Length: 151
Length: 127
Image (tube, rainbow over the protein chains, first blue to last red):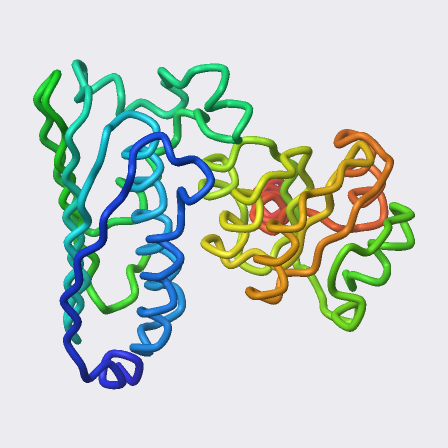
């Protein structure tokens, strides 16, 4: 419980993501990872949270016009809500299957489109909710508890 | 395995991190799709990839991997090297192809840690 006690502060932040901006894709995740490290969360929690945010950010960049990340970190948990205005996901069940991807050739050349985005988030989050409206956008809620997950 | 040994085995050119060569990597991941790296690479691992854009470094940073070897003689642009310096991620480039580079390191004993664990438990079951 030592690591748990080390996180003292509460951080609330909002970040914006621009769709199709492949060059800056991942910047928000980088910033959040640095913030979590500063807050002295357990490195394994930081890694898992960063992977979740990175995948969510990439999905916004690839499939949405723009998105917003609402970030909340307390000594007990990290909560991230990612909302976007974009094409949405017609079949969430399919999108959750490892390897299923609708990425274009351009996205694959950039190193995206492994079809592991949502499965990676599910794997690393303690709580993961997804809601999508086709043609309107998608909303992800990702929660990680501050204690280390035992697998 | 030390980065210095990897440099020698793969005949790498060092793009950044000359002073980090005594650092160790515990496993390796050969991959061009970054979500696969996030799914399968382990903490402290080496990434071997043909993907030379800035996402290769970002993914390595997010996944807590240690260093990158670019294969097929590829070299990333300045911006990518700059981010690697900022994050302290050593970068090397080898002329070898991905398959050959991974094979050489595997033969020299650099394995995937989870695979090693599986092999060990499989051996125990047989016994």
